[in-house]
Amino acid sequence: MAVLKATSTTAAATTKLGPAACEKDAEKLAFIEEMTANADQVQERVLAEILTQNSETEYLRRYGLNGAADRVTFKSKITMVTYEDLQPEIQRIANGDRTAILSGHPISEFLTSSGTSAGERKLMPTIQAELDRRQLLYSLLMPVMNLYVPGLDKGKGLYFLFVKSESRTPGGLPARPVLTSYYKSDHFRSRPFDPYNVYTSPTAAILCADAFQSMYAQMLCGLIDRLAVLRVGAVFASGLLRAIRFLQLHWRDLAADISSGVLTPRVTDPAIREAVGDLLRPDATLAELIEAECAGGDWAGIVKRIWPNTKYLDVIVTGAMAQYIPTLEYYGGGMPMACTMYASSECYFGLNLRPMCKPGEVSYTIMPMMGYFEFLPHEEGSSVGGAALPQLVDLVDVEVGKQYELVVTTYAGLCRYRVGDILQVTGFHNAAPEFRFVRRKNVLLSIESDKTDEAELQGAVERAAALLRPWGATVAEYTSQADTKAIPGHYVIYWELLMKEGEGEGEGERGRLPPAETLRACCLEMEEAMNTVYRQSRVADGSIGPLEIRVVRAGTFEELMDYSLSRGASINQYKVARCVTFPPIIELLDSRVVEAHFSPSCPKWAPINN
Ligand code: AMP
Image (cartoon, rainbow, N blue to C red):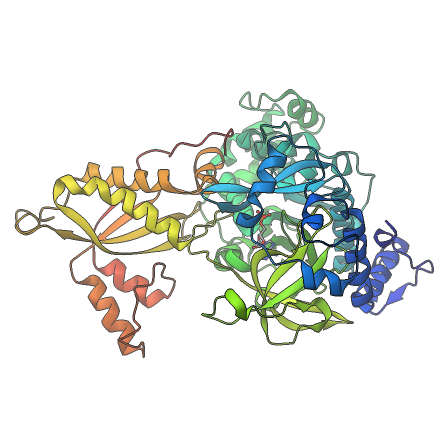
C-alpha cells in the first residue's frame, strides 16, 4: 500500500504550510504537500488500487468491469448509488455471506452511521486496512495544529471521548460506531507515546461503555491535571457542552473526591478505579478552587477559569454543530474553536489546514489518498434522476464557488456512493480543493448526531396525531425547531390544532383542547416514531432532552404565512416550513403558544436491533 507512506525522505524544517515543529511534523507536512500537489495522480492511483483489489467481487463483475482499473471504464460502467441501492448486498454480508460481494478483502466489521435508513442506522462495511488509513489522517492533525499553536508538547489535551454500545449482525460481525471501533483498536489503545498527543483521560475511562462512569472519570482526571491542560475538546460541539453540563451537575461530588482522595463508589468499573486510583490524591486546595469557581453559578468563561492554560477548544462547530457556537463562546470565554477534520463512517475525508480560523471560515481539504472522490453538481431545488444525469466531476476539477454533493468510492467496496453531504468549493491547496461544509441533505432537525428528515417528522406527527382523534382534534399545521438554549437540547414541535365543530370552543381558559396527559402522550409517541439514533441519544446517552409540543392558538400559521409574504414569499409557492430557525418567526410562534407539554418518559431503545 505504497500510497499510505510518506514518500518524502528529506524532511525539511520549513514546508509550504509553514515551519514544522519537529522532524516528524516536517515529514507529515511534506506528505500533505505531496498528496495535495499530486492530487489527480494520487486519485488515479487510489482508484486503480481499489478496482484491482476488488476486481473479483460480485459487485464489480456485475457491472462488467472485467478487471479494468482505469477511470474511463469505471465512469462508463459503474453507476452512482445510495445506501438503499446497496442494502441487499449489505444485508447478505450482515447475515454472514463471506463471499467477495463488495470487497476483495474480508469485511472486518460494520460501522453504524448516524445516518439512518428506514429508521435504522446505516451499516457501513469496512475492512481492517481502513484503520491504518484513518490513523494516517489522524496523524496529520497535530503537525498542522503545531504550525499555529506552539508548545502543545508541554502539556496535555482534555478530550471527552466515548465508546457506545455495540451489537453483532446475525452473521456475527461487530456493528458499532466508527469512533468506538477506533478507540477499541490497537491503533488507539497501544499508541506509542507522542508528546503532542498526551490526554488527561485514561484509556480505561474512554473505553468504559457506561456514559456516566466514563464522563465522571474523564472530568475528574481533567480537573486533577488542570494546569497541564492546553486544549479542551470533544469530537462535536454538542459533546463538549454535555461535559460542561456534567460539571454543572456534579462539581460537588468531583470536588469531594479530590478533597478526600477517594473515588466515588458510583464509579464501579475496575479498570477505571485502578487508573484513577493512580492519579487521585487528597488535594484540599484544588477542591476549594473547584467549589469557588462552580458554587457561584456563574458559568461564563468556566473553561478558561478552571483550565487557565487552555489555548483553544478542539471541537467540530461546522454543519449541524454551528448552532452551538454562541454557547461555546460563552463557556469558553471567547476561546478559539478549532475544527480539525471532516470524516464519516464511509470514509475519512480530510482536514482543515488552517484550524485556528474562525468557525465561519472553516474549509476542509479532502486528502486524495483516503478514497476516490467525485462530485455531483448541486443546485438548490434540483433533483437528480432519469436521463438527465449530470456528469460527476473529479476532485481536481471542481470549481470555486460551486456546490457539490460528495460521492465516494472506498477501499471497503462502496462504489460511487452518495454520502449526502453538500460541500462548497472555497479554494485550493495546491491541486486539492478546499470545501466548506454546507449541510447534510434532507436533515430537518439535529441536536447532536441525530438527523431527522422531513418524512420522519411527518410520520411522527401522524402517529401522535392519531391519539387526538378521540378528542375530535386534528393537527391542522405544524412546524419544529431544534431548541439548544439549554443543554441537552430538545426538539420542539409547534402544533396548531383543529377541533371538531362544537368541540373546541369555549369552556375555560384552554377551550376544549385534548387533556394535558394526551398531549404528553403525543410527545412520547412522536419520540417512539423517531429513528434509532434519536432514541439512543435520548435513552442511552441523555444527549437529547424530552420532546416538547407547543400548542399555538388558532390562526397562528396564517399569521406565519402573512409574515413570509410580507418578506417577499410568493403566495402561489408558499409552503409551511417544517422547521424554523429564523428568530423573528420563532418569536412569533412562541408568542402564540397556548400551552406546552413534554414527553413524560424516554422512548424505547435497545442496543440490539438498532
Ligand atoms: P457518521 O457517518 O455518523 O460518522 O456521520 C458522518 C457525517 O457527519 C458526515 O457525512 C457529515 O454529514 C457529518 N460531519 C462529519 N464531520 C463533519 C465536519 N467536520 N463538519 C460538519 N459535518 C461533519
